[in-house]
Image (cartoon, rainbow, N blue to C red; front, side, top):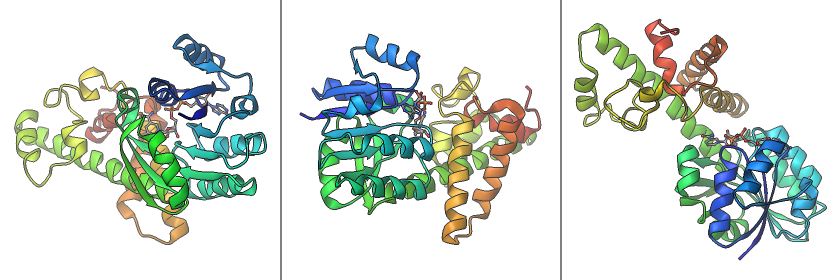
Amino acid sequence: MSKIAFIGLGNMGLPMALNLTKANHEVVGFDLSDASCKEAEKLGIKIAGTAEQAVMSADVVITMLPKGEHVLSVYQLVKSSLPANSLLIDCSTIDVESANKAHALAALDNHLSVDAPVSGGTGGAQQGTLTFMCGGTEKAFALAEPILKAMGKKIVHCGENGAGQAAKICNNMILGISMIAVSEAFALGEKLGLSHQALFDVASTSSGQCWALTSYCPVPGPVPTSPANNDYIPGFAAGLMLKDLLLSQEAAHQAGASTPLGANATELYQRFTNDGNGAKDFSGIIKMLRGHADE
Ligand code: NAD
């Protein structure tokens, strides 16, 4: 079993760290927020006073932080406090450029590193059913895989450094676009006098089928567990969807890729969050598309 320092005990990090303890790993956690540390401690996770203290005797460091700047500042802090040849796994969703900088920082002190963003949300984090998309060398991935298995059910090695973040950004661009497509179809169906259930029954078994429709249906009724049935409480917050779409556009710009629908989806989610809906589930965008954002 490994000695793991877990940095970032928020909505995703805390349940992930708990699954590592359930798999008998020795976990020491740290978060800048006192409330997050107290909550983790209450649930049985040992808490260190600083990030440097958390990693001191660890052979693996896992980060689950909001953005690239947070990951880089933690890597900068801890890399020289770590025992030699440690493994750093970053599970945050961040831009590819920062992911590559994080790998370079780890390599400066001869550590192995993997970028391993996740899909599956807080439910997947709690149930240990996340999908991990990993970037890194074969050697680093081979060491990371058994640890990630304690937190997820599907672990994919996508390629070299940064490939995990690239896969995550592409996947979430599909999701952002397809949620808008599904929402527009329901808004049109309503105008045409079609019931939500009828459109769902047809599209969910036809060529319009997709995850945004069958797992996160943006209208109440057809999928009882979708956030639409719970006043659009996330789920997956629109603000996080916007963050991922902005990352996709930054990556597209840098790589010279043409993503016109990605750009359009980014603008629509920007408008939706500017209107004060950043903390709502991303499927709530159907209200804006209908032209009734304040319904
Ligand atoms: P969160 O805001 O709940 O948690 C992040 C935690 O990091 C916070 O507790 C914060 O205090 C802590 N933190 C920030 N800077 C720190 C630092 N320098 N040192 C220590 N702790 C620090 O966010 P989350 O929902 O857990 O998401 C984490 C990452 O996972 C994000 O990159 C997000 O895009 C990604 N993600 C989230 C979901 C989801 O459904 N919430 C799904 C997939 C991926």
